[in-house]
Image 1 (cartoon, rainbow, N blue to C red):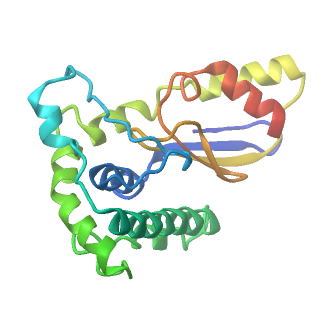
Image 2 (image 1 turned 60 degrees about the vertical axis):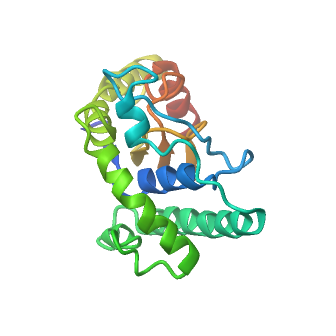
Length: 216
C-alpha cells in the first residue's frame, strides 16, 4: 500500500509464504522452538474448522516428533541458525534487486542448500505435511492472502496526519505475515517486521498509530 504525503510512504504487507511459515511448521513438528525464543509452539486452527476436526490433525504437525535430548539440542541450534540467517538475509537485501536471493535459501523440497544434514533431513520429512496444510481450502496460504489487505493502513496514516498536524515522514516498511507462532511483532530491521495477524497488533489501529508516532 502506498500513499503520498511529503515525499511519500509505502507499506508492504504480505508473506514469505513458503519460507518463514515452513520454518515454524517444521519447528513445531520436531519440538525445536524453545520458550525464550520469541516463537511459540502454536497449533493454528484454519478458518471454518473447529478444534478436534480431523483435517487439523492431518495437516498440522501434532503430536510433536519425539527426539532424544542430545539430538533435540543440536536441531534446535541448527534451526535457530537457519531462522536467523533467513531473516538477516531478507533484512540486508530489503527493497533491492538482491531480495530474491533470500527466497532461494531453503530450496525445497530437497533443501540441498541447508548445510546441516540433520536439519536437512527434518525439513525433507516435514515438507509434504506442510504443503498439505498450506494448500487446504482454509489452510495457511488461503488465510494469509485474505488477511493481507485487512488493516486499513491508508486510513491509519490519514488519522495520524490529522492528529499530528503534519505529513507523515517518508518511509518504506515491509511486514511479513506468519500464520502462527510469533508472540509479538519481531523487529528484524528498522523497516522490516515479522508478525502474526494477531488482533493485539495487526488489526489494532492504536498499535499502528503508536508505531507511526514513534518512528515517523
